[in-house]
Length: 73
Image 1 (cartoon, rainbow, N blue to C red):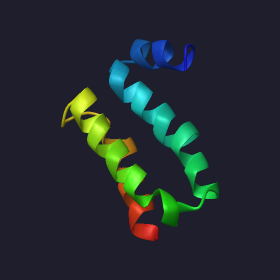
Image 2: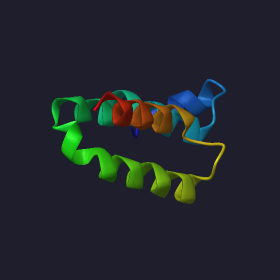
Image 3: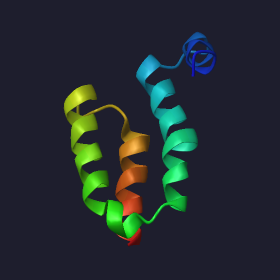
Image 4: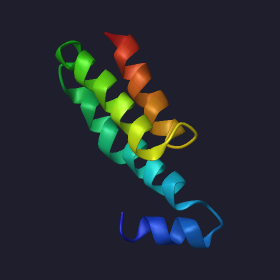
């Protein structure tokens, strides 16, 4: 992440969008291998926390991915 985000910003992107991309594609994708039925409430709480921490108009890709995982199970 230390290398990707500065390059993403240098290419014209926003810093939070770069962090969002890394979270959605590298970190949260690993949740698929877990038992999502047992993590449903935690995923909802994580979405709520991210909305409070980063604001409503940011982290769209990560929040959409977490919501999609919630709907799977």
